[in-house]
Image (cartoon, rainbow, N blue to C red):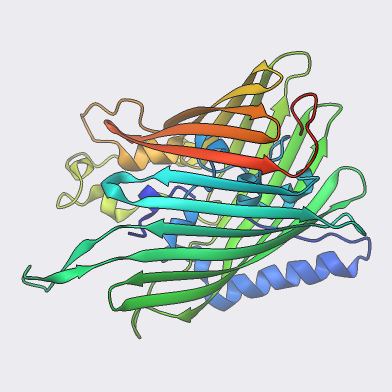
Length: 367
């Protein structure tokens, strides 16, 4: 219900001012958060549903995007600094169909201040697992219950000079599995750099630092799904192509988990395929691309190395595991997006997004 394999990934920000004290204060806050919870050392994590892609655009490009040259509210949910690209009021709704009948819903609305350049957004993510059976340790069914996971996030972002922007978000997360419940207060901090002349864009984000307000049990050892990620995006000037790369989960180098090699749970256990140094490097990479077939129609694609690594079967056919693709089209004042992400052979997730603009129609695609 909160497993990271079903939830490849969310947002961050740093509000940047000209006063030198502000970056120092933000750096101190980050350091305090890391030390306070020691969350970056790995281990079992709660609230992994937060890793689910909020919208079809990020899902089509590998599941996590922290640098981009286009505006999309679902991207700002992963890196709040990308909110600065949303230069007018919008509303976005997304639906993600998960395996086992579970469903993920995302709703977000943004607003640009009339007196300043600050952009704010309020977002809600809700995961419905339907009804599942409740059983005791012997397997006797005791009844049925409805697991729930949801989060509410308030984000703000503002530009700094011409090319930089920072953003920060605060969110409350809740998970409920029968009689077990947990709550957490989280923050996301991110920055963004863009050079429209050269087509280069870059971003960095520290996601899900914070603390538990309530744990599932008194001795619950789980931690929050903290993640440090970097990304670059390059528009190939004079062509319809753009390419990007995201470096995910940089808070931990070795992403091989013991569960991958336990014969009781994984066929991989029959073949101890521990990643080499090069393999570990690629486990952190997500590659993405976009093709502008028309000013209003874009095709997108991505490849998540870690997803294929974790969900592949030794000696088996893995098909398109790790690949994702989709499209986005603009029909003023509505933008539609659809994605298809492959997790295992025969197991793929479809996501649809609709974004409504509260501004007069444009003549082409608006970044």
